[in-house]
Length: 112
Image (tube, rainbow, N blue to C red; front, side, top):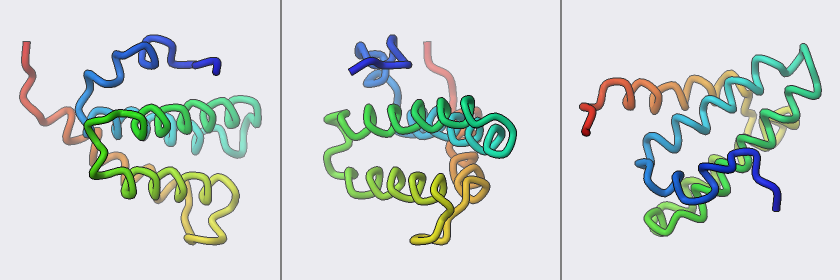
């Protein structure tokens, strides 16, 4: 498999907290929303990167008890990308959801 997030795929991803991982996924969801009706190539790349980050999160052994929740998030993301017919989801809805993780990361105390 060819990773777009090469440094994350080599182990750096597992050093991030779940909140940080979700915030990073949210960045790709936001990029996908931004490019959705503007540039299909950039839209597709953002989707691929987002799915890659979801997959890296699902592979993280620390979240074994939360796999259903993370996998459902991936499923809803895919639904939103393809029009939201199953879950009635949209990328804009997901951006609002993931923004909470980004806010939590910025509000959390930094450790050295």
